[in-house]
Each structure stands twice: as structure tokens, then as C-alpha cells.
Length: 149
Length: 484
Image (cartoon, rainbow over all chains, first blue to last red; front, side, top):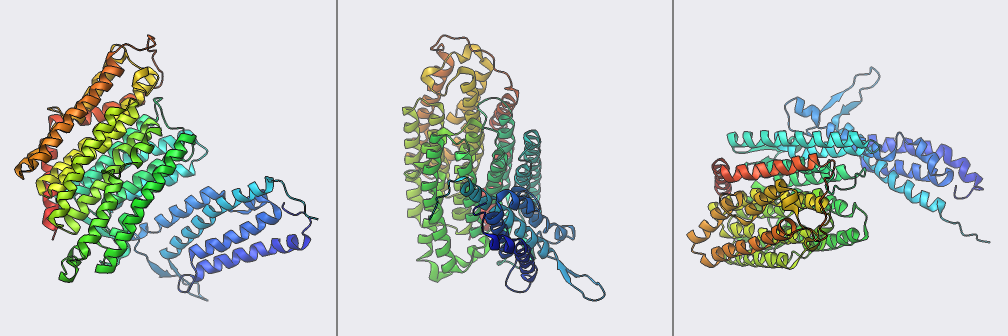
């Protein structure tokens, strides 16, 4: 913990983490037709992880990630690569993206392989950059803190 | 989809080996299996392309020329095949105890990342995409250089980065200029756009800039400084992989871009390329003659051999292209095998420095034979694979009445023989300077297997060159046919 006495920060960060993460996923989904997408969503999710790590420490932030940073990034890239395969199974060129509507009764959300690709990018960005940020913050934690009066 | 195999197979393998960062044995297995699958795909590609001339896929189903296109013809397929063969041999060798690279979690992802970048560079049909693969190649190579973490390796990595970045920036600048002039990046579209008469003045300059970047990557005179400054710090298998492959990607790019995409350049261009080729040959072989460290000698020979490949490009004829292609395949095998053999020499005799070792002929006659196969091939003595490569090239220089070019190429062979004879006399023939008996080393079997595999392929190329010569000739003819 950088500063154990920042009570307001501590109180605010726990809910904020989930708010930011929800916003990140919202950005990921909205990026389908509007500004946003996997890359920006991943960066916003990283902001949540970084904030949590600054207040509660690197270990706590790492526990909240879906898995360790490196597998998260790798699985993201694999998901993005796999999103091109359904088209190949249908005899279309690799990475040709397919859309279909999901009839739920009350709404018909449009699903697509692009969404899988974007989710992969989301994971890749979140995982890769979280790997860097957590290591940097861990070094900052172990560095001697200068006392200011 | 087969056209994407050279990219996707190593890329997925790299990702899977990255996932297994805590399990060394599983990582090694997945890595080797991935390389074998890559080889299988490459063989299928060579066969398929021989049947249909060219297979292509435009990613995402977008219309050309906007889609990123991957396409393989005979030239691509052969280069992919040799990449895959080298990948298998190097990973096999890495499993042995002969100067292997440290088995850190990042090693296999880096090796397969390099294979993916090289493989993709051979099948891309888009100029900017080619740049991307060059960049990824640089990153993976940099990772492999710095991966050991010793100060001299970090020093080498920095030099490699600084000098190669110049090449990459030149490449990017040239791509930008060409795109600005033609509005195209796809190879076929560029071929058409290059015919526009208003571009006749500017385009050759941009293409020359592009060629300069490729020459730097290939290690041509006088832009090869990065190569002898960095390669000798690498462990044997990584050295074989990088020393065997990376410079040849520059040659491939020259063949593709000059021989096909932009068609014939002004004669002055080929004239200067020819003289650059001769200077590259001579400086490389003289640099090698000066050194005593096996790895440094062989690294300088990479430069020297690049001269031969450039000579074929400078001849600017289907026969020259065929010669370059044959020579490239032979050279990758022979050169990589010499690096692998150097690793075995080091682990058996105790050092890479020729002055401090000896007595290997008596202790390991088998290794001596394997060395001679690769060394004679590099020199170009008949009936080795190098002989046919040089024959194709030199015959074409004489046919074009470039007697000086052909003469220098032959003279450099003699100097190459000098270097190989030096290694032979010092490492194999003279007794060990410390007069010690060379003790057997355990765990070398995979390394021997890798060396045997490459030696077998070199021998096969030398004794049965006809099928390959026919294949490279039809590859060169296909380039000629599709060029403007």
C-alpha cells in the first residue's frame, strides 16, 4: 500500500473498480457501431486495475484479474485469431466476419464474430499492459518512501 | 487457408508455448510439435503451388486491392519450406546439450514468433504488410539477442537494434513514398500502377530507397556492420536460426519487389547492385580470414555468401533469379549446419576459439565428415549443393559477358576454401593444445540428429539437384511472367 491512511480513497476505490470495469465492457460492446472497441475498453479496464493496485497493493489487484496477466493477454490473442475460423468453416476467406441476430423475445441483440475479435483485443490489451503496470507498481512499493513533513 | 499456414502455425505455437510458461517439458514438446506441423504445412504448400501456380487469400473477404492479401507462389513456397526445415532442426538441436540457449519461458515464444514473422514475410502480397513482418522479425530477433542477459549480449542487441532501425525507417519511408505516388500497397495493384507514365521519373528513386533498406537487412556491403557486431554472442541453435534465415529475407524481398512487383529498374541500378555484390563477397570473406573465433568466422561468411545471392539479383534474368533461389536454399542449409557443428565443436573440444582447441579428427571422425560435407558445400566443390548454386550463377554471368563478376565469384570461392581449411586444420587436424583427451559428453543425441538431418539434405541437394533446379527455374519463370 502506497499510503495506508487515505481512507476516502480506499472507500471510493472498491466500488469505483467495478464501475470502471463495467464502463470498459460497455465501451467494448458499443464499439461495434460507435467509437469505442476492444482496444479502448482494454485500456479503461487497465485503469481500474491500476487504481486498485495503487490503493490496495499489487497482490490484491492481481487477485481480481480473471487470470494472471500473461495468460489473459495470450488467451485474448488466441480468441482474436479463432474469431476468423468460423468463416473458413463456411468456405469464406479467413477473418471474414459473420453476423446473426439472437432472438430473445424482448430484444434481438446482434451478435457477430467481430465481437469475439474485439473481446480478444480487450483481453490482450488488458493482460499485456496489466503485466507491465503491476510490475512497475510492485517496484514502486518496494522502493523506500521519502518522508515529507 | 494453406497460404496462411506459414503465419498461423508458428504464431499459434508461440502463443501456446507462452501459456505454458511454468511447464518446461510441455513447452518443449508443444514447440517441437508446432514446428513439425509447420513443416507439414510447408510441404503441402510446395506441392499445391506446383499444381496451381499461385494460391491466394484476401483476408476478411474484402475486395482487392483493399484487402490484405496473402499469396504463395513457388518462390514463397520454397522459402517457407526451408524456414520450416530450419525451425525443426534448430528446435531439435536445442533439446540437446550442445551450447543450447537457456530454457527461459520466453525462448520458445520468441523462436516461433521469429518463424511466424519470417514465414508471413514470404507469403504476404502487400507492401505495408511486408514492413510489418520485417518489424516483427526485428523484435523477435532482438528478444533472442538479449535473451541470455549477459552484458556482451545486451551490447550486441543494442547495436543490432540501432543499425536495423535505420533500415526499418528507410523501408517505412519508401513504403510511404510509393503509396503516395501510386495509391496502392497490394503487389498486383502496384505492378499495374507502376506502368503509369507520369511515375516513370520518381518511382525508380523510391524503389531504390526500398532496395537500400532490403540491402541493409540482407547485410550487403557497406551496410553489414550490424551482423558481425552481434551474431557471435548468440548460443549455437539461435545463431543457426538467425544467421541462416534473417539475411535471406532481405534477398527474398529484393527478388520479389525488383523481379516482379516493379519490374525492371534502370540498368544503372543493376550495374551498381552487381558491384555491391562483389564488394560484399570480398569484404565478407576477408573479414572471416582475420578471425579465430568460429562464430565470428562463420558470421563473416554469411556476408560473403550474401554477395553471391545479390549477384544473381543483379543479373536480372530468369536464370540469375533461379541461381539466387537455388543458392539461397543451399546456403541456408549449409550455413545453419556449420553453426550447429560449431556448437558441437565447442561442447566437445571446449571452446569456440580455434587457437585453443584441436584433435577432433581423431576423437570424433564422424563430426569431421559432417563438417566436410557442410564446408565443401559452402566452398562450392563438386558435387556439393554449393557447386550447383555457383554453377547456375557463374554460368549466367558468363552468358551475359560479365566476366569480371564471374571471375571474382570464383576467386572468392578459393578464399572461402582458405577459411574452411583453417577451421579444418585448427579444430580437427592439429592435436589439442592442452593435450587432453576429449571426454564424451552426455545428452548430445538430439543435436547430432539435427546436424545429420541438415547434412543429409545438403547431400541430397548436391547429388540430385535436377528436381530442385527444375522447381527454381519454374519459380523464376513465374516471376518473369507476372512482372510488367
